[in-house]
Length: 53
Image 1: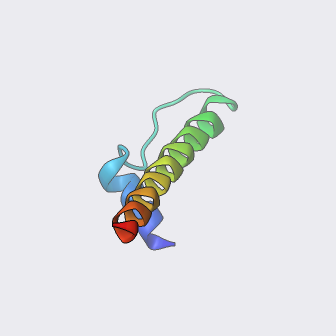
Image 2: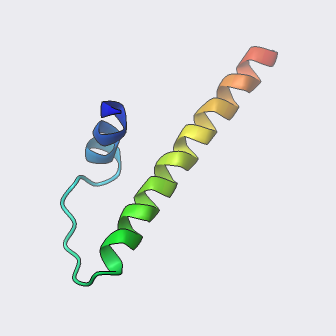
């Protein structure tokens, strides 16, 4: 679980979010999660392509 938060801090702009509103903060967190998941998906796709060579 720690690698997820480490990736947030180092690769996706950190933990601090300067947002106002009850809907903007969860939306920003959701977009960060989506970006993290896309990065992981791309990593695993590259790994599977390398394994097939």
